[in-house]
Length: 281
Image (cartoon, rainbow, N blue to C red; front, side, top):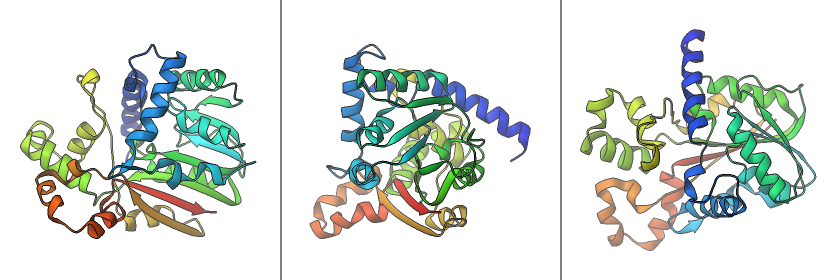
């Protein structure tokens, strides 16, 4: 992607997420209030489920890491960053949008936790080589034009033997093909309105009724093969799929009650929307 085009998209991305930092609409309380912090934390860990089983804490493994220097790339409103701090890690929280950094600082102060908060770019991380034991980024890098470059920056900033934990959207998930492409793209006329699969994915994966006029400019999804290629600098790469609801299957959800329970238990690992990548430098 050409530099000028990339910068134009990044400006639009910053405007979109600056208007509504991820998760900010999940509480009716004033942003930055103690009630806001409690409600948005509860919502984040409740909403990420495999069927009805919350998976986020288990899949990321916050509590199995302690005493590490952790960088979160794309901290949003700070829920996950605080979870890393609660586990006894030293946390640097970076986001492309200043409002997100400010809310993350407020969340840490509300919890009497320590952290460092930086307004920065995932594609140009402002840190020396080999600065961190863990670099974490959950659902962020598929919203920047230079996803490959951002992964390269994560690799650069990790110490040798360090761990990258990254979530990218999975291209062959039930969510992409059932809910988004079929439901939003075909039944709701998304393809007619936008003209492309990429635009349908962008418009209908990051939308809520409170921000209906503010359309997400960029969302991408990747196959496992594409993910492995992007992480080829790393020594070891593991990819696990999570995040599946019945509604993700579109019209095929009507068949789910007739399938054996053992089959359905395997479905999140086959059709989940979130590809959780753990990679070792």
